[in-house]
Amino acid sequence: MTIRLQIVIGVILVSFMLIIVNMIRKKKFDLRYALSWLTMLVVALILDIFPRIVFGLAHVIGIDIPSNMVFFVGLILAIIMIFTIAVSVSRMSNRVKKLTQELALLQKELDEIKGNK
Amino acid sequence: MKKLVIIPAYNEQASIKKTVQDIRDNAPEFDYVVINDCSTDDTLKVCVENGINVLKLPINLGIGGAVQSGYLYAYRNGYDVAVQFDGDGQHSAKYLENMAAAIEENDADMVIGSRFIENKGFQSSFMRRVGIKHFNVLIKMLTGKVVTDPTSGMRMVNRDIIKLFSEDYPKDYPEPESVVQIITMGKKVVEIPVIMNERTEGVSSISPLKSIYYMIKVTIAMVIARIRG
Image 1 (cartoon, rainbow over the protein chains, first blue to last red):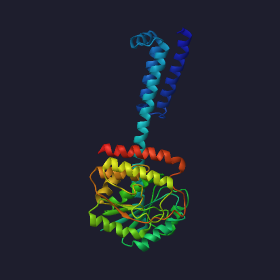
Image 2 (image 1 turned 90 degrees about the vertical axis):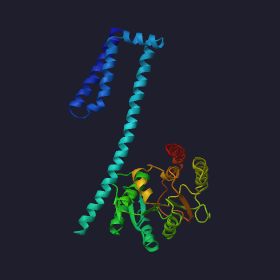
Image 3 (image 1 turned 120 degrees about the vertical axis):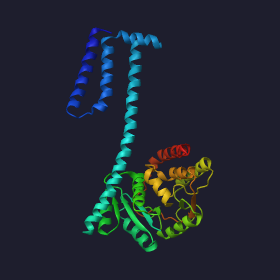
C-alpha cells in the first residue's frame, strides 16, 4: 500500500468522522446509533495507519491477498449493520402500530366526551 | 351478552353505508364499529355525516393493524363476542346471529363463516380456490384439523380470543395464520355455512402480482405459528 493511498483513505475516514460528530453536535444523529459508526471508522483508521495488522490477520485466517481480507471484513460489517437496522425497523413499526391504535381509541373517547357536552 | 361487529374499511366510501345499514337491519343485537384505516377517499366523511360509529386511525396500518384496533376497542369496552365483517358488501349480516349461536352451542373460541361447506354463492376465482386448497392441506398437516375456509374474513371470536388478538395479531393477510395460531393453542374453531357476495364496489386488497408474495408469506407464517406453539 502506497503512502499516497494511505493518506487518501485517511482523509476520507477523518472527514466522515467529522461529519458524524457534527451531526451529533446538531442533534441530527443520536449518539446511541452513531456509536457503532464511529467505532467502525476508528478501527478503519487504525488499520489505515498500521496496515501491517491487516497483512498479519490475513495470514492468520489464510487469505493470500490482504486486500481480499479488507473486502471480506468490510462486507461482514456492512451486513451486520444492515441486519441491525432491519431488526430495529421491525421493532419501530410495532411501536408505531401500538401508538396509532392507542391514539385512535383516545381520539374516539375525546370525541364522545366533547359530543356529550 | 355484548356483541360487536368490527368493520375494517379502507376506501369503501361507496359501500360502507350499505354495510352498516345491513347490520342495523339484520343484526340489531350487535353493536358495530367501523375502523377507518386512514382512507384516502371520503369513507370518513360518509361515516361522520351518517352518524356511523367510527374509529379513526391517523396512520394507515393495513388490514391486520386495523382489525386489531377493533379487537382492542372490543376488549377495552367489555365485549364478550366480536366478529370481523368486511366493509365492501361481501358479507351478509343475517348470518351474525347464527354465528353467535354457534359460539354458545359449541362452546367455541372462534366461529368461521365458510363458503365451502355448502358451496353456495360466490365461490371466489379459480386461482383463489387453488390457494385456499393449499391452505386447507397445510392446516390439516400442521394441526390435524379441517378448516374449509381459512381465508374467510367473517370470523367471530369469544372474549379470550378478543384479548389474545388485541395483544398479538399478524400485520398483513392475518386470517390463515391466526387460525393456525389459535388451534395450536388448543382453542376450539368451528365453521358454519354462509353465502358470500361478489364485491360490488372497490378493489380487493390482493392484486394478482401480490398473490405469489401472499402465498409464500402466509405459508411461512403458518409454519412459524405452529412452531411457536
